[in-house]
Amino acid sequence: MTIAVDFDGTLVKHKYPEIGEEIPFAIQTLKMLIAERHRLILWSVREGQLLEDAINWCKERGVEFYAINKDFPEEDVVKNPHYSRKLKVDMFIDDRNLGGLPDWGVIYRMIHEHKTWADLLEEERAGEETSQPMRRKKKKSWWSFG
Image 1: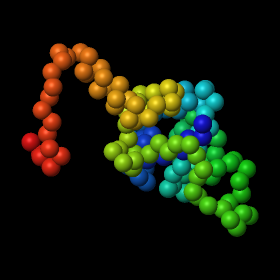
Image 2 (image 1 turned 180 degrees about the horizontal axis):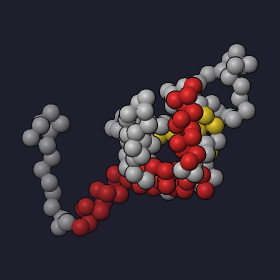
Image 3 (image 1 turned 135 degrees about the horizontal axis):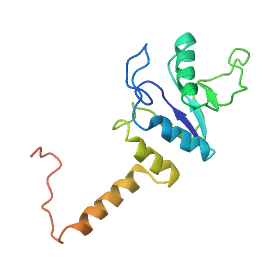
Image 4 (image 1 turned 45 degrees about the vertical axis):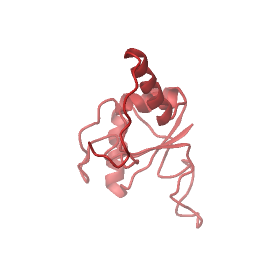
């Protein structure tokens, strides 16, 4: 699987243009995904020295990406007049996702077990239902806030 991974807010806490504190388990999860032969692309708004700082920060922790802000490492963005930063990947890991960034353990499960967010929610609901006595809960109206 080819996976695009954001940097600020995803691997580290937001402190742009500086590099924030590492988000727990982010680096360990990336290392496991690389070991499982997934292609990881660093996908960041950072450019120039700020991008180099992010790349080096990851390398110092043992994470080397397949490519940086492009689909293939050999892709030449200067010589290719049709270059687009729109990546062709199977998945994006980004803190700006609808609903925010899940815990890195959840992210790993989704990729490793080939499960969707809906699959994991359904499993959680099924676990709650089996651990409690069978009783119907009164449904709330969708427009109710109470």
